[in-house]
Image 1 (cartoon, helix red, strand yellow):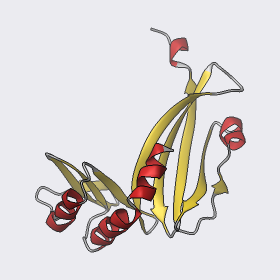
Image 2 (cartoon, rainbow, N blue to C red; image 1 turned 90 degrees about the vertical axis):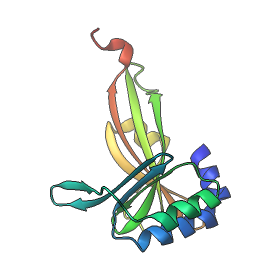
Image 3 (tube, rainbow, N blue to C red; image 1 turned 30 degrees about the vertical axis):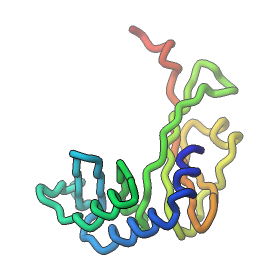
Image 4 (cartoon, rainbow, N blue to C red; image 1 turned 180 degrees about the vertical axis):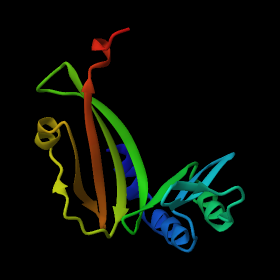
Length: 152
């Protein structure tokens, strides 16, 4: 939940960054000095651009003290990647659940609401939680055998 706290503390800044991203022709923006990866989704995958023009977005991120931007356009709304988590299943200690989370603002969802019971019961899935100020946290997960059980 640390990522949600950081998002809450920087709500206005992230809203501004996403507004700047909206003004670009790109669908994927990853920036962290010295790395800049910017792409556009196509039918064949992602077309990564050699010399993208995201100077204003990077300058603004630096002004805000951000060290990393990892966003993508998903279902018509810019998405901020959150933290990943790995948990041992309570119902079966021989399995672990890998959970990816990401955040979108203002997106109305028809997805299932997240709960520990849902993630515990389903081997894969997607759900959401409303967090604050119009932000929604999405989780996607999959279950795998516990790493200690894999053949060496």
